[in-house]
View (spheres, rainbow, N blue to C red):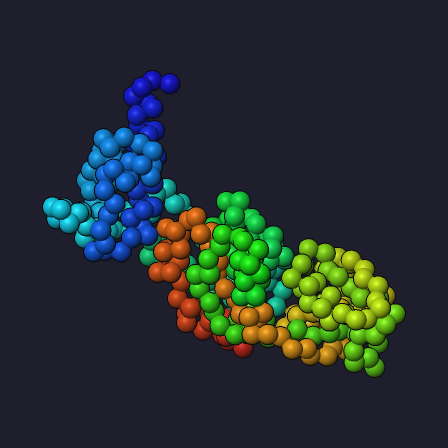
Length: 306
């Protein structure tokens, strides 16, 4: 590799880093000094100067030196900074849209993220909230949708995540129920076989909690087979999402259980190490618009598109 190519790559990398920096800054904010930027990005001051000049020549930023007071960002062009930061698309992950509530949430998110900056948005679907968060922290997705309760558990475990948007109560699900194979049962009893759904850690935690103090046998079952096995009384009970049962028009014995508000709230979560994305999603995601579309889908007024 020639020295010229190495220089080009270093400049290109610094331009990307600086673009991400300015994306998360507000207009009127003081920018770090050349020395601070040089130390942060591990490049020479000259490289910082050249990269800043490129951003200014591209019209991505306007900066104003104020002598000893420092240099300030007085204008930024978000669309140009996104391009120079090499942000080509957004990839998110949420639960499988197996209920009207989830379908409406997915449709609202896609709608609000199809934005003026024309960044393509794609969604992947994974059942377990912990798995979705780990996918984001590994860099495979840019944001995830989980319950506020799941996000809080992850934060307590030391996961470096930040809740950027909260869509409010019942935006994730209405409430949980215990479902029984026996139509006469109203509570979990000793001797029952209780189902745990594969790859559904958060839901299984709730199931185990409902069985505390009971002498039951836990059996792991494929998620898609659980309700069938309950109906045939192969599994005696499990905890499930009421929305999924109602939307599928399944006739089954179910008993509502208390769902704390945080377990019903959907939140958009981003890796703390990507502050430029936190800032972008703060600006791009309109909670009211998302929930309005969600309610229209739930009420059958519009068809979900996601």
